[in-house]
Length: 135
Image (cartoon, rainbow, N blue to C red):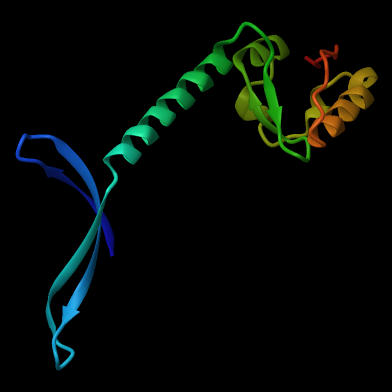
């Protein structure tokens, strides 16, 4: 199986190693040892931690922005709902996640929002547009 371990160099530098351990068998198919093949994943782990930190920073930025920010999947189910939208709509994030965005948009704006969404799904960037959010 695969497992990670920390290996320390002679100069006390830590290296992250991903190892695969495979039984080593003798002439009679009996296990006589283990062969370990490793890969140094120190840099990969460092980049992964940095990406996670950036993602957390961006998530916090979205949630605390002084502007409405929400996201939807390709079927218009809500996937993101920031603090501004929650505060100004009265609907908390946990209440709306997975629901259709159109459930929270004023009737007069639903066709426009659906049209803009369809263009965005095709890869077309849309300009700023106005919509009414239900409260």
